[in-house]
Image 1 (cartoon, rainbow, N blue to C red):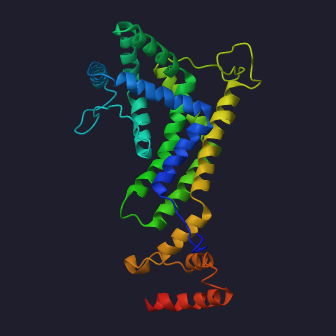
Image 2: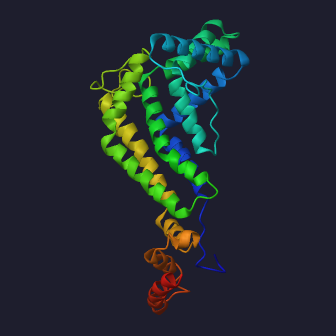
Image 3: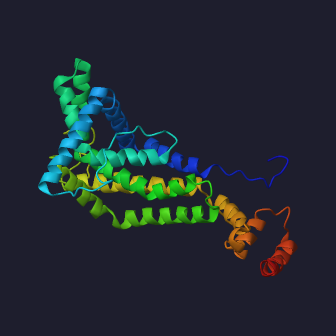
Length: 312
């Protein structure tokens, strides 16, 4: 930077996306607790061959029951066995797959924990399984599970695009903007549908649904009310805040300068007969380098670019 004041540093986009998830977990206590519980469940349920066999057997029996009742159809490639992979700290997609599997095989996870609670080899194992059951079989845990899956799903397409070696940056930046728009749409219009999904899931799995209009009591206290309803807590203090943090992180980590620089460079890409050529974006790129392009050169560049693209 001392030798060249116009030098810019742009961090790896894929890693930046992962850091947005880390930021949500650090900035929101409910999300941090949620991922702690998920991690502990993975340790317990996937901690031994016996537990993994129990999980697999319960899934198979559950699927057989669904076949017999006609709720699902048999077919090649359908209803493949689900496992619980541990999410990688630096891979966004692995968190998405873990939460997706958690929802699909939730009843099998509960079954394995109940078996450990009854038949665990040590009192520590039995107590831990009992504790995790009290945590995951709650409306709030299921709410955060569905919320984080939706947030991750919206950014997962962007994640897959950023992992492609042949991905052009113009398309990646476009998907970044699409992701932000979808998150904003979810914030404005997604509350009711999310609540319906969570309530339906809780009905199916016999999880108590609290009265949302009653006062919310934070922590274990049943005496000290927060002064807001449970619905207000979930909507304003969890739903809105999680989405707002994600949007803010995307804006901060993928800032305008980085996007302008990359879009400008992408506009100079000769692939497919300069299909991404955009004079305005190249002009914006040039203005990032005032030591190279003064006002006179900027005006000249505009005319030169018109000639350049026709010549090409």
